Structure formats: structure tokens, C-alpha cells
Length: 183
Image (cartoon, rainbow, N blue to C red):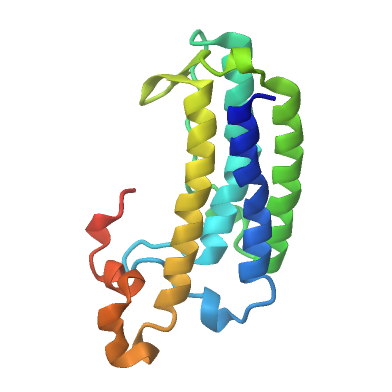
């Protein structure tokens, strides 16, 4: 693997560990609040969404770039596939499912991608031409974005309890201006 892929997978490999440490065994009082008040996601939703990415996005798109280049566009990603699929699954079980899928996908990535592949183009249904390097970088940053979203939901679960200290807690102040958060 190339240094870029090694560095990217080093971060991707850590996400399941972060989620286990942060969420497994935690009471609902910390995990049952959305990151933003309107149309936000709880940690349960975020982990379900990450699972969907592992099932249908990152590796499928990597394979499509390597096998077809720009001749076969990526399938559209269903950002909300988790909603019905995972409604009755515990957060702890979702975290473990995600960890298994991520380990499998990183092993598959190691088999698929080489340094020569990183600048290969693929075709995103709405963004147009993208490269494998961009896809892999997005995978890692997507993880960071959603881990931050989990933290925001957890912080929001105790918004009222912090009292006047809220004025010093940026994570809670961002909840009041969700337009500052990109979709």
C-alpha cells in the first residue's frame, strides 16, 4: 500500500475503536439526543448511516473506479437506509456490526488499491468525475464528520444541565445555529 492509503486506513481503522469507547454501554440519557434540534441524528442514526456506507458505498465505489473508470457511474447513496433497517437494533449491536464491516472493508481495500490506482477517475452521479484518492480521503473525513456529530448529540443531551456555562461551550452553541453545519 502507498503512504496515502496507509495514512488514510490508519484513521479509518480507529473509528470503530472510537465508537466502542464512546458509545458501548452508555445509558440512553447520553445517546438519545440529536446533534441539532431540527432534522438531526442521534448516535444510533449516525452509526446506522456509517454501516450503510460500509455496505454500499466506499468499497463498491472503489471497485467501480478500478474496474470501470468513468464508464459506469456510481449508484446513488441512500443516506437514510438505516432508518427502517436499524430501528430495532441496539446501539451496542450497531457499533459491533460497524466494526466487523469496517475490518472486512479495510482488508478488501488492501487487496484492491495500489499507488497506481489513486488517480484513476470514477463518475459520481451528482459531482461528476472524481478520483480514487478523493474517494478515500472523503471516506476518512466522512468518519470525522460523523464522530463530531455524535459528540454534538451527546453534548446536546445535557444542554439544560450545564446552566450558564453553555455560553462557553461551542459544541452547544452550534446546536442553536444548525445552518452553520453543512448537510
